Image: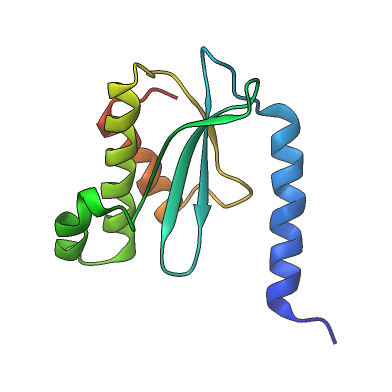
Length: 124
């Protein structure tokens, strides 16, 4: 019998590969990729040409620990982390990005992270 969680992970991996064929980050417009675990959410801005991470933020970042503690749920924490990533990118003069949802549905925490990044100053 196949485990339901492994089926979900295989389906997400298949969707992620399909998306990655079309989404590439360049120096002018890097890729903002999101990873969602059960408790946390992580975001990185990546230049795929140079293969380097330009900026990163998560709900585990020390910079936003007080704001995270005041948040009611994981969705609000994701929005705060997205806003931090947007501000970090803005300080590194990155304005336009390509959003890579990494196979996750654009809903809930992923959407909140994207909205927070937009509030932080990113355009995608």
